[in-house]
Amino acid sequence: MNEMIPSAAAPSIPVVLLGGFLGSGKTTLLARLAERFREEGKLAAVILNELGDVAFDELPAGGMPVSELLSGCICCSMKADLTAELLQLADRRPDAILVEATGAANPLELVENVMEASLHRPLHLAAAIAVVDGPGLLQLRKGSRRTYRLLTDGIRCATHLVLNKADKLHPEERVELEQLLRELNGRAKLAVTVRAAVPDGWLDGLDASGRAIAGEEIRERRQAPDGTSGCGCGETHAAGHACAHGERHEHLLAVSYYPERPFDSVAFEQLLRRLPDAVYRAKGIVTFADTPSRYLFQYAFREADFVPTASAAPDAIVFIGEHFSREELLRELAELERL
Ligand SMILES: Nc1nc2c(ncn2[C@@H]2O[C@H](COP(=O)(O)OP(=O)(O)OP(=O)(O)O)[C@@H](O)[C@H]2O)c(=O)[nH]1
Image 1 (cartoon, rainbow, N blue to C red):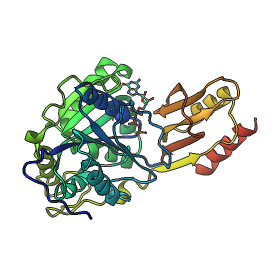
Image 2: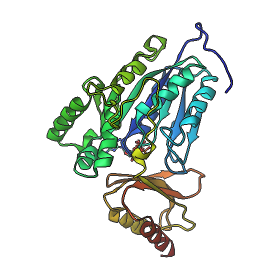
Image 3: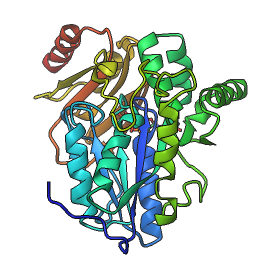
Image 4: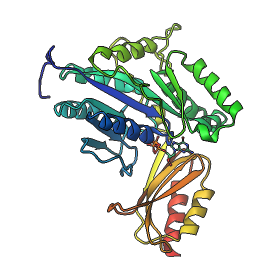
């Protein structure tokens, strides 16, 4: 590792962790935050992590450094890569570093990376945000226990909570979810949003004066009063020991597909409608035989969204979920290509 002891004079770079379950709106929030930095004439560097082997997210242009870490999760299999990226980006002296974790990561497990990087570069953890998909949380509460636990672990460990997709919630559901979030984590700052439109100033304090506050808060949560770790993994961790529970999201399966021929758009939409509930997330770039444009599509908790794209990237799709048949899905996609 390239040693560089942080100088007391160098202003510390705030690092913001963006977590939240698959499809909850992390990238939507990231794009907003990056845009706000740009409007203030500041530069935010971005680290994007994806479980699949392709990144489709289109972020606002503006010269911000973006690093993509693909095919793994920075809270376990790619932990070392996150520290290395933080060090590299810090050398470019951005005003902030925004880290978007995979929808399966626990922010708690990323804290150690920021702490480690802060020994070598002047940077600090300023906030750990958990973006919550309101309708998705309602669905998962009745579904798989492992996945619900993964989701609530992330909520418990956050310093900031975003209850997103409020446009898809009835007023009573919104009240119920706000109450649930408060029960899970009464200390975090909560924003209820549509398209992750957090209020101006919601993340204030992202400067050197905010140094280590988030890190301290999250460390405190690690030690719950009953002696178990605050992240809900059921073990007590000695100070400084990283919680490396890679198996916590091993039950989630990511399947990639690279179409070689255009799909029929109606048949593709029908396939999305037939997906089992346990496919929580899909996204990709697809070419249709019956439309002039190619599309970037997003699918989360049964909601699909298609946006025309001018991207030069080849067609690719990633599906993420649990207990679904990879073979069956690949067979159906291959059939679509033959239509
Ligand atoms: N209806 C509705 N849709 C939203 C809202 N926020 C985001 N979306 C849509 O939800 C989908 C997922 O949003 P992303 O921001 O990509 O979610 P993500 O958490 O980054 O997804 P992953 O990185 O794949 O886990 C996209 O189609 C968004 O347009 C919202 O408040 N309401």
